[in-house]
Length: 124
Image (cartoon, rainbow, N blue to C red; front, side, top):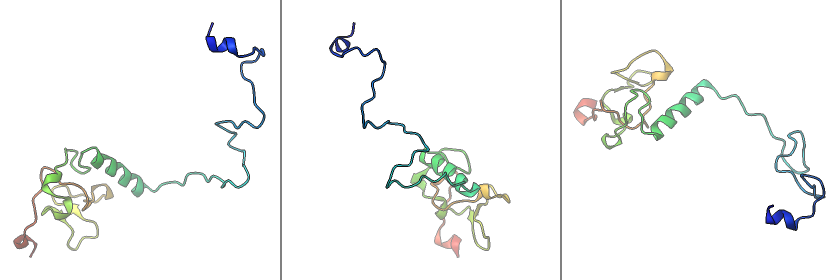
């Protein structure tokens, strides 16, 4: 027998409730005074979900557009010569152009293996 059980009185119950004790997982319908009313989670837009997925990939070291390992030592997509943004509403990588928001090239992404640094001669 467990030594702790020997010290406790046997009430014939598995759980003894203590007056005034709060449950760790109270009834979700219970509203205590002074507590804010919990709001249901807002539906997230597809763009925000895509950004969250892309951010998670970058944090794990994967480039969201190429699917290859990132090369942060080379720079970012924002300073890459392959990034097309002049006259375009949505910047794209010239190596992977499509008419989808999923292939927009974010300037904050770390560089991929195809990164080519923009020089002053190329940008003029």
